[in-house]
Image 1: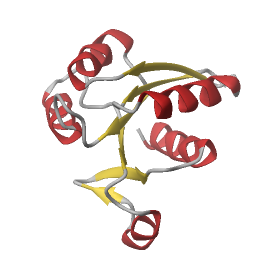
Image 2: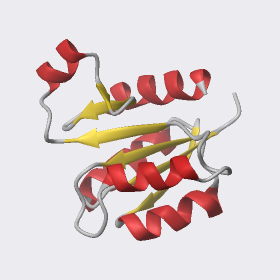
Image 3: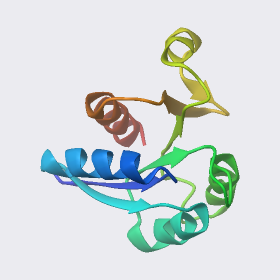
Amino acid sequence: MEKRKVLIIDDEVSFIDIVKINLERTGNYIVRAEHDGIKGLAAVKEFQPDVILLDIIMPDISGDEIAIQLQKEEDTKHIPIVFLTAVVKKEEAASGGAIIGGKTFVAKPTTVEELIKVIEKQVQAG
């Protein structure tokens, strides 16, 4: 299997570090992490990820604003985005179909196994 490129944009440094280490440990992913939205936007164009894991609530620019900007760009609109959020509980996500604004989302806290399932589903669908 070719390694998947995953970009994580999230202001929770400890969350990003744990996810990055565990995804890379599988040997199936190349992971880049950005801790703020503006740098994350720039990283999308530079890194060209297969999937983006995107926090919704960040101090500089919200995840939904980032998603809107990426959807407007011809060279980034094809990249699947998975929202990460602590605003919605796991139980709500499970009962509601796990979609926000047409995008898949994962409720925090989550496991690496859950993220891998979502990443693979998004990459195969994209």
